[in-house]
Length: 209
Image (cartoon, one colour):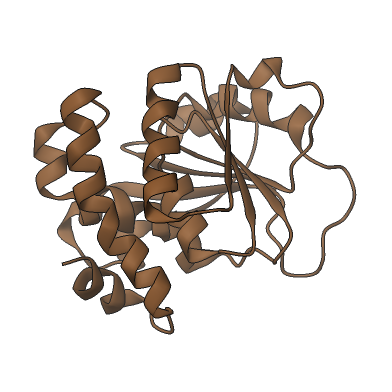
């Protein structure tokens, strides 16, 4: 199931990457019975609703090897875990204020052999000692808040050509009011034009440079 859906839109994965994607479903199913991070309905559509949704970022952006990405409010590990499999030479730091969710992230990453992930139990505004090349997030908070938390954590220097510095987030619904109130002007992509699955109608990818 994982390979069919993911390889519909992506090619050139190594066998190791495909093994890790395939491992995710059963690992999340096991952990979800102990610590609920995914609804039962979503678990039935795990690769569509969580893995492929997260990979919309990878369809649009290329993260360079050696760069550092933070997943702000990672919850159970999305989009960070699928992106870490997709970009094995990029370092991902997954942050959440709910520690039990990070337990799932750490256990899933360890069991699947995903070695380019670190975690931290805190709020974004508590991070004082690190800067990141890019911050990613999925439906955590209004864009205004996401940008307020992200801006101090982004490196100031110019990144190599083609690297998407700034905030990249996955959101849904009518975003016109939210974007207006944020005071920023993000680039916006309709995910249903990236992945032609009905589930992605009214779901968007936003990039604040």
